[in-house]
Length: 391
Ligand SMILES: Cc1cc2nc3c(=O)[nH]c(=O)nc-3n(C[C@H](O)[C@H](O)[C@H](O)COP(=O)(O)OP(=O)(O)OC[C@H]3O[C@@H](n4cnc5c(N)ncnc54)[C@H](O)[C@@H]3O)c2cc1C
Image (cartoon, rainbow, N blue to C red):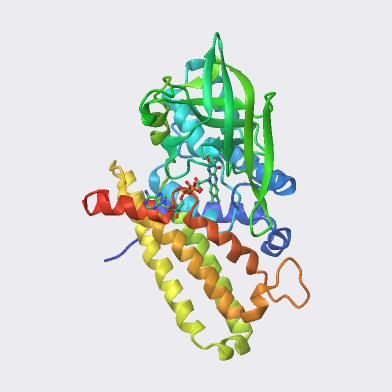
């Protein structure tokens, strides 16, 4: 069997590579500044991200998966896959919640005025969006959320607290789920809103993670008044709108492309420092296992992209790719620690540091929680994939 892309897709891959080479700062500089390639965290990284995304806008790539009528380029799933693979491999800052799920939800459920107001600013990378779903008592069981939205004439009044809001401190707009009917069954009393993050009554407080990075926030709403025109979709049907507010590209290929790059880095460290391998010879087997996992996982992600390309809806298949990719990322980070030994604990320019793998190791802990925990993915695979009864 021979796996190959069409020649036009391969030509596109080359174009993406050339673009990245021309537009991204060299890898050593990015590593030194701590740019991660994900959602931006602090102001300097935010500026770097926005600058890069503006260049993607000029290329017509930022919203490449979107339909043409909404300013996208309607790219095929294979082109999106190759694009995401190359961007993730090179650690490019392409994450953008506006593009990934807010815009697609507005296309489906937004009023004509909402589409006109928000969509061009999303495709132009003019606004930065955050997602306000999770609460201290509602994560995996999101339908339990308690932030209240009460109708008052032409306005809604919001009260409550959100947590783990990535990039909330930098966002212009928030995509919010709130409880609009506390008496209805919990899935049927939620409404979606768009919220100006500068509205009076919103307080954003930083949450510093264990890698000492500020990515998350707590967001408090105290009598925040927003116009009724900022309700998205039907009142009390928000749960169902949220369920479809998903990425166009759900293959999870980014975890594998980024993982491949990380293993390649570890292999080059091992080659340049034979004493590290002599100290712990089993690390050779670990590296080989990790590379095998990356290759297996890459095909899991291609399977999802292929299904989307032929019009099938990946369901448990996307969970398989997400589960394997996030756990593999943690194993790669651990292999890095095994390779470096004690020096692996040094970080942020510590004296005698060989390579800062510690930050990535600490950051990798969150990958099995973000975007649905491993247990939740296993539950989906068990019930929808294997047809097992719910526990
Ligand atoms: C890096 C990162 C970025 C994030 N960004 C955002 C964001 O921008 N906006 C936002 O709203 N949220 C965000 N989150 C929050 C994320 O969505 C939640 O952390 C996640 O849904 C899990 O919820 P929880 O933390 O409340 O854990 P819980 O749901 O309380 O889970 C605790 C533990 O119980 C397990 N568990 C829960 N339910 C089940 C079940 N049914 N079966 C088996 N085990 C179960 C979980 O797997 C976990 O081990 C982010 C999280 C991370 C790590």
